[in-house]
Length: 447
Ligand code: NI
Image 1 (cartoon, rainbow, N blue to C red):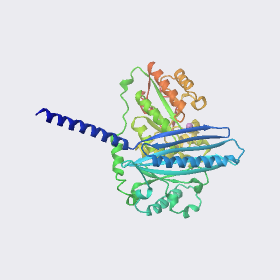
Image 2 (cartoon, rainbow, N blue to C red):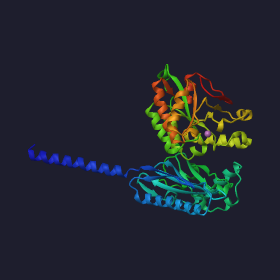
Image 3 (tube, rainbow, N blue to C red):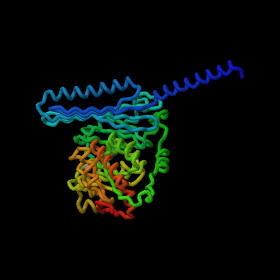
Image 4 (cartoon, protein in one colour):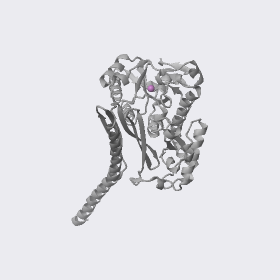
């Protein structure tokens, strides 16, 4: 080969490489991703806590979301101008679900304002097609409006079957009332405005099987159904780690209540992975149902998932049917995500009585170390309290809904691992200590 030819080939090679590099950069740029924006304002007469997503390379949709948030803020500020009450609150948060290439983002606004604690809420859902990195409207995801009639029928069946008192207005609601839907891996989640249902401020989410509405969905966007779920359950069942790894170590079960709480819990499990630590989460059904992907992530990383009831009501103050609803509904929500029965219950406030214990066929897991992190709210004090108080076999109670707790726990893990402590899940601790857990029984430590 002569020199000229060599040069030409070299030139093409360089051109080719740089062209693919540029293409790669462009393609990377087009990848779907988003960041979390968090704002907190603490003023004399109000508190504003706002979280929302911004999407990379999506100026149009980001502007639209920003406009929506600004509008909610200015409505709130307008209302509180006319009141003399100091205790006003605006809360905007979001959660998302994922099904195939479609992401559903739900932005929720809650506010409490004025003399009579006027409650306001509003919901907005954005859909994202991650494959084309573009926003998409619900009428492209759904091919037949008949789906809303099916949603309505299933919602009314659910309300009747679960003895939920609902206003007869429900029956007359038009299809727009059934348009707040999230597409999650296993279910379509239909969000109903509880104002219409029972005048409470709670939102009601009804899980709808894809099988019931499959023919109304656009197969271009939704293509995997039950099959994928079975594969997930088979492939990703987490294993208990080999006991030998912990020979001679003092074993501690950290347990996190009241979550999951999207960004905080996500940061926590990432930090736990770096430290080869596993823990347990006692989740609220009302939070788990909104963040199924996060719950699944927690599960596949090998942490233990237990129930902390649906919405944190004190069980001893409820009627039997209400107790069963709190427990059974939450177990259903969690099992739908992980495919596994929920074995452990932590009753809110640790509060139970003999009848409750006898009627719920689960092991009640309480705690031996109460950090009171929600009260301390100080990273250093939280970590010191844990470091000074834990012993082998302890169950430690903290909450993954406060940033100070997450930071304090991470610090404590770092310190204690140097002192021969290891952090294991409840499932692991039970197995390593060779304890046979009974149902309808209470455990405060596992030694
Ligand atoms: Ni709690």
